[in-house]
Length: 202
Ligand code: FE
Image (cartoon, rainbow, N blue to C red; front, side, top):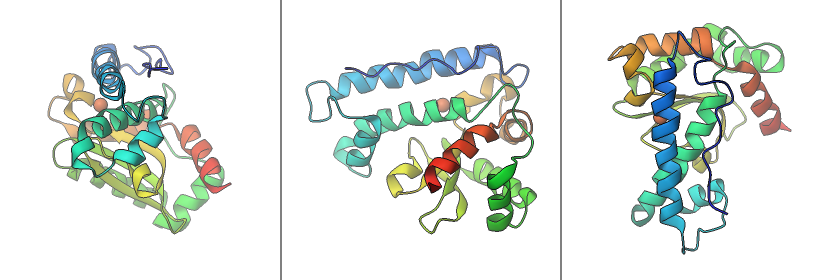
């Protein structure tokens, strides 16, 4: 009944040269795995045992006495979502309904890119940049600190980009903007975002 580390949706070296096998080895095999191990230890014997990740995140968000459980549960969820937000054949622009919606809500694809880059670059310290469906049904770009996830604010995530240093430091050192450019240009998985958009709006 305990949580397990999900497999990467591609080989560990599949995102090279943009993200190295070494980065994914640490990021998935060490960091993500540690969140899973910590979470299992924290929920064992508590009211949260047997609950889904989403249920645990919603029940513990914003509660300082449950911060350890929230942080580990959300980091397990966020990282699984992040692996799927990238693809070895990613990058470029979306097509179809999601592309039209981006134009309608941001003005143009390039306006979305500017907003997403800004969110990632200006998240001070550790955190995440997200494309979400907002409560008003419009697409929005948001950033969250540390483990926080827009899901617990009632927003519907379509894509995420990890901007913790462990996501890029081995490959890009301090050059977070270069990692962000590469994420959008070469890695972002628009098919995953389109599937999430369909589910969020159906
Ligand atoms: Fe991470």
